[in-house]
Image 1: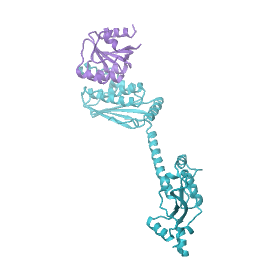
Image 2 (image 1 turned 45 degrees about the horizontal axis):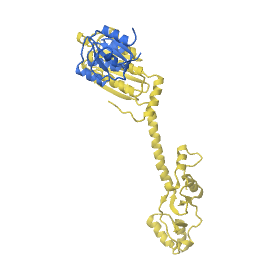
Image 3 (image 1 turned 90 degrees about the vertical axis):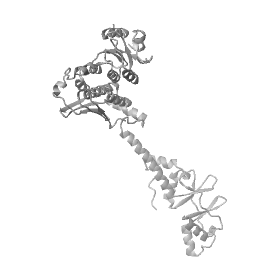
Image 4 (image 1 turned 30 degrees about the horizontal axis):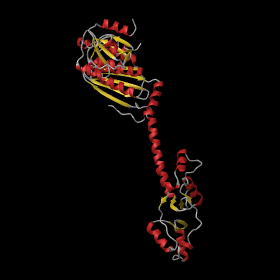
Length: 113
Length: 324
């Protein structure tokens, strides 16, 4: 199932750090903080649910072909991370939810629950 | 006189196309030196000397009446009529070419009649030029040069079966430089994407290069990532300046890590780096001493994508640039 990235803001109330392309969709998600694990296992066109609020997450997401990063537990992105995300066209969000809560809510959006 | 070794029955197609496409008017020397009736053979002799020519047409009211050739002059000197006017001694039975005939006609005329030059007339029978064998060979050589140049260029494009061939990108990686980490992998990915490598292959190359890049950042005192793009594969090599891996077997085990707490907190050092690289590679090798570690990962393109890269390359022709 394809879900527009705007749903993360509009339906789940996550705060966006970057402008969101209304034409951009995701079709899967991956939860993880070990970047090598994300690199090796996350699917293309998915979103990354993580607490790794630094530039390297953007690099990994971009290399894997992911669409967005959701930072959990209220972690915010430093300006260099936001800049990198914009450059790589990766949407960047934050939420006060835990990775567990964010994961099941996003799974619900994807029609997986 | 030697024949022009080009003809309409056994020359290559390119040449055939050429000698039919080119018209006599394209090769002739236009605006010819000519003389009116009443000119003496002596005057013609002097004119030939002055202009360094060996034949002069006799023209009245733009109409060609005859040609005085070097032979005619020699005969006039031999037989003592060098001071006579041209009309009684010029060659009158002329073979002429028309300006819109293909050059192939001119070539066969030269081979058949053994004259050194033919006058060229237009539709109104006016003299518009003269064509010599030299005119023809010069123009043909010029055209053939041009064709060969084109062939060479086409040959080159097919030699580079795709734009990636034998391109090498090299990136130096600094110790603990998390700021720029991922740069090399991103560049490699962009390069592969540009040449229509399949996404799943790009992903494998991205994983290999990123893990190797992070290994240099996290574990070494600095090093270098080199990507060699070949027609059938990409070779990613990581070389660092030490301190080397103590136990390679352990390093290749999933979950084994020597990274410290801080590095782990960044999401690295999970002990998955080298195992990840090995699992995405078609060929993988590693060697290590305390002076440094070298890891090579080779990822092969599938036959399908090589085909795709080639077709795309032909379409986009010379759009390849080296981004290094």
